[in-house]
Image (tube, rainbow, N blue to C red; front, top):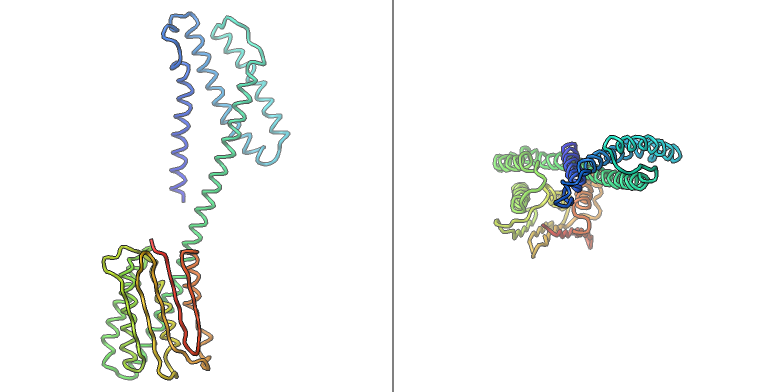
Length: 338
């Protein structure tokens, strides 16, 4: 945010230099070719250059001091009185310039009133608009930073939840002294590598995320063997150029394996992922035991987080539908990818 602010200030400074450079150059640019032969040529341009420098000083005095310290703080009368005081300070100064440059005509007070008023009005307008834009940009930056912080927090909650579930799986295999223990640990190692080194990015390629989910499903197949009918259909081209936020799909799959096994007659889990146009279609369906409430206390941790992430990241660009019907739990997610 600080770096962006420095860039904005530097760009603003360059614009100011260019604008004032044009103002100082105008009298010379539009002078007739033969004007240099006139006896008052140097006096005229000297006076214009000097007075432009004074208007420039008034511009920044009003914008950076008077407006900021008095007008913004609603000290309107004090702001008005200070401007009047500045005007009467400038009057003898301009009169002095007339004398120094030997102008052949007299100087009157009313002659600087239009220039003074125009400079103050432009300065005040510039300051208020510039500060409003800066405030809006700052608010937007803060909103983005808050969004990043919240998303990072939600993602950090998902990872320990996932690790907790997988370690429980490994404990079960150890107790059973299963031959699947070693390949399970290797599979877990590849999953951990993805979580530690790939998910630091803001987005990952859709094939990478799909491979991660498939690896998790393979890990569960090692655990449950034929006790649970697991059907997974993934149709994501490896050349697919779409990207997705990491760890966004796995909580739905975790939830299916958490609630779709156990004391359930003919348990099954169906998972589908495919792309149609620029729309991601993802669905998870599992059977669950309606009478089993033993997992209710911890259920939904991952789902609550991922629902919040989806809302923050995609808003109206996604739909999430959850249905329960006759002991079957189904989640359907659609995301418009970019």
